[in-house]
Length: 329
Image 1: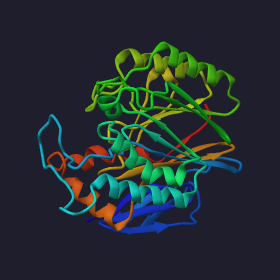
Image 2: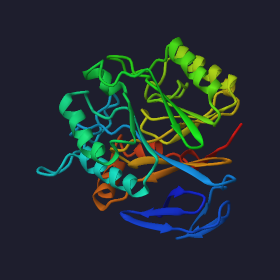
Image 3: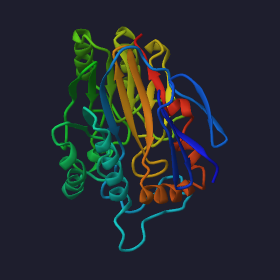
Image 4: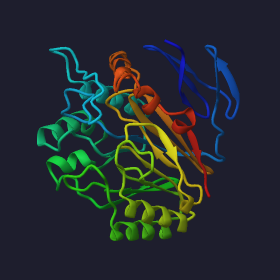
């Protein structure tokens, strides 16, 4: 397998070669390097001190035992061998251990924590993440929670204050629906928080905005336009960050004044992702992390086969979709 640059930070490059992980640390920011025959440039470091770190996870899917099911019917359908823990448990335990080693100020779990919103699935989520992050974890539901238990985790807007940044966490789920929605009260509450915030603001939710080329339905058109216009009215908002699509992708809306909409791929299958956000006095860095325990890499490399082998092209995204600066506007 060819070397793949999975991560660039302001001080680090991470390359995966099959199930081997090569980490190059203590690097200079905003500098081109060549490792293992591939080139990568570290991110520019924002000015000032590092104030805080945020970790995010999404699309965990506790309770799923097979992956690859979709209306496209392209195959294959994959699962763990008999007697082995199901893949969401393998992937999420590895993710939780990596995040705990980072020691973030907060962990934000952004929906589809479960595959069907059932109590035993939520208990499995709590068993992995609750013990490690009980005092620093925030959660919002995704469409999969809405399928099984419409009232589970129904918090329309949460305001999370972290040194150097405010996070507005929005519930985009609609009971029984795949597509998401934001109502006028949620948008208004978001705008109130942003108007009063003294620090930059990141807005987060489960669903990305609707796009003409979307594969998985995101927010409905009404919500997409309302959110984009609201973001455009407030220069303090530096990003909208979400999951749901199971892909790493950055999009932009003309109404939003150049603010990136950052989608992060799922924990549960290729590439097996979580995100680190470094908060500096002068700006923020969004850094993709590929879950890298041996068991996790063995599973995610198997899931490259999904959707007729097209999945890596869809889910991994460009390096600029995964690792980028989120500056003040």
